[in-house]
Image (cartoon, helix red, strand yellow):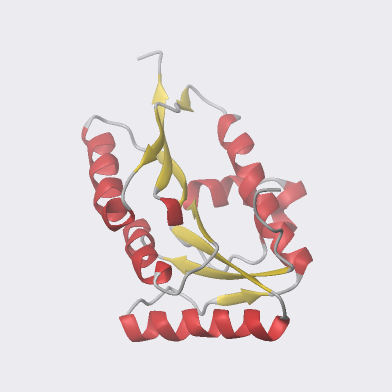
Length: 189
C-alpha cells in the first residue's frame, strides 16, 4: 500500500542484435519516464523457446535478438498509454536508437502477462541447464549507474571470455541499473 496500483499498463518491446546496444538505449528510454525497463538476453530467450510450455508464450520475439528490452508504462486510459508508447518510439528515432525490428506495442493484458511469465520462468530454466557448466550467481544484483551499464557489461563479458568462459547469461532491471550476470562455470575444472 505504499504506491497506488496502476489502472492500466502498456509494454513496448525493443529487440536488439547486440546486448551493448540494448544497454546503451536504456539512457534514451529513461528520458521519457517509463515505469520500468527490463532486460532479457539471448540465452534466456533460447532456453524459453526450447520449452513446450513456454514456446507459444514467447512468440512475441521475432528473429534471434541478443537482447530484449521490455519498457513498461502506467496510465489511466488506452489513449494515454498509446501516447506514451508513440512518444517513446519517436524519441528513440530522434536519438538515433535503432532496434533490429520495429518496436512492438502491447496493450493487451494477456500479451503483457506472457512477457512477464517468460521473464519469470527464464531464471528457473537457466538454473536447470544440463551439463557440467552451470550459471553461477556470483556477480549478482550489481548496482551500476545506468549511463555505465553498457561499459560494465562489455567489461564483464570480455573478462569472462578472456578466462575461458564461453557463455554468460544476464538479465536486468535496467531502469534501476540492477543487473544479474551469471557466467556458466564448470566447477569440475
